[in-house]
Image (cartoon, rainbow over all chains, first blue to last red; front, side):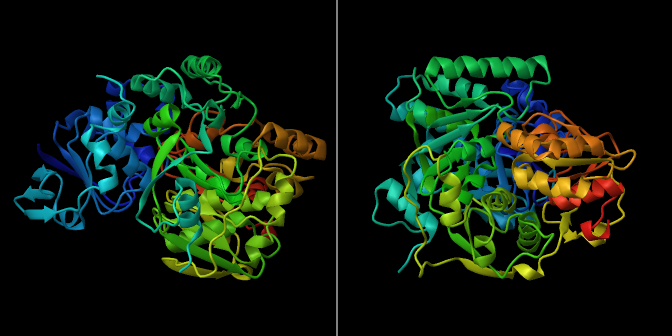
Length: 165
Length: 417
């Protein structure tokens, strides 16, 4: 499966309050509505202009702060193809795995790519390809590949519990 | 070769002889904490297709984030949670007014030495003050725990912080924590287990200790601990939900890094907008006009925090044009503060006292700032827009600095008041 789209580039320490504001945390539970607030306080254009397959590229410590999973779900709803960062905050990283949203650590790609660049992400090959070069990223830890391959923690848990469908 | 706290406790819980950093283990949890997000979690749980929560006894649910409900939607959310806990036989349910979840977890004796706690809240590491391995997780993860009571965890590398000497009079564990975050950065503890050792830590009482692992979430830490000792055991006497067995790091444990501090050199600080590591000595921010002061939250809403603030506020008034909002972290703290006369001191000084909960910390209610306003707060986070208004600023500080600044009408070192 190839992920293809344009880059949305941000800086370091993008926290979950700007990815999805705290004031909606207990009142917005519909995924479509969540998408409508994605990156609202960081980049007001994003939620209107993002296309399926687009890739968010950011600096270190992406997703720091609150554990709110909406900060991942809102991106899944908007069909963001992948996240590429210098590093991810740990709760956010887990939430990405649990929602089968590729969160890839690749400093070179972050260094080279800018907003608007066209990229293709190949999860099997472990590569990010663009006109500016091809960048390799390390695979997911083996112990959690099962969750990702099942499409997320919920389908994975169903499978483990032997629940059909 | 010795092992650090995280490696030992996870080995024990996973039924392994030992673990090493990077290893992935699966454990059954001792405690699973959630709050106002429980209804949303239960919806995800239902998608798994399991009728009953696997272990209702390990779940602790505390309503605190938007309490009492500020809107109809919030109220419906609470109603859904009450229905769910009743349906599932979850007995450890604490309704509106009981207090902030991390404080209630401790008061009700669930935060214990040697236990593994996962919470659907980023400040779950607070329980590490009691020698628990306590980590924050997301909603989907908590839903899976409802179905299975188990969680996968990557054994973290460990960072050791040793604090020598003693904090000086007027310097608090909040100042110490902010100083360390200022030095190591908001991702300085990323993915790590942060162990706090040293005589200065041992000299702190339980309330002062709880501040530190709470703040370590702002350094990206997976979990943070303080080795349990007589101070811990005395606090837990009569409260502990069950018998417990502490886990300690080996004396020859390997740490990724060891950082040492002299407590005597720590001074009162503030974290300036909009980052927790934007830490400077208070005097460098002194004179900054404030509009609002918040005393409370899971970080500094305990009796000793209110006591220090009350000492500053007694016989004084909050500056004209400034609101001081006081939120005791639990019903227990509220009553103790009432009996000690602190609530009277606060009201007489002109403060507004609110019911135990998270209040305005994350922008839900009870003191949202207006555009252009500055708040000085004992909370743990000051991201732009955190308190509900984009165009406003939040400074973080100790209860002493917050109280002194409320009186002065601007940020001030308590000694200069």
